[in-house]
Length: 85
Image 1: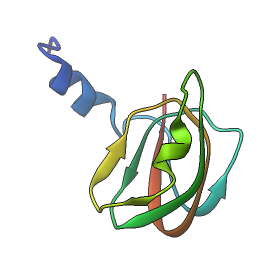
Image 2: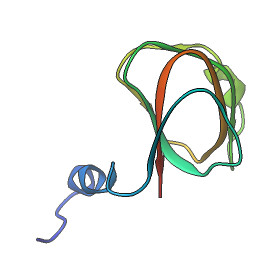
Image 3: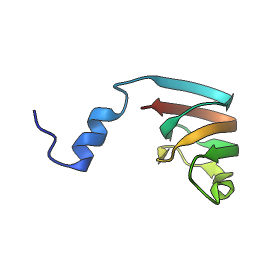
Image 4: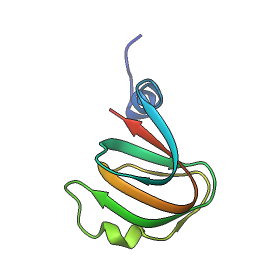
């Protein structure tokens, strides 16, 4: 089946490779997306090739997905799902 649009490509990619579910902190990672299935509080975040990511140190509503090359992330409450390329 040919990929016809970006949404279809994203749907195919999410969850087809390594997925890590975590609470607390992760470092030395290479996530292309992080999903928060429940309300979660980010206390620190590092994203490669990004500036101003400290603005994301806040409460993420349930269902939020960040599409960034995230290399380190700490949450003080909630759950995060990191997608590895």
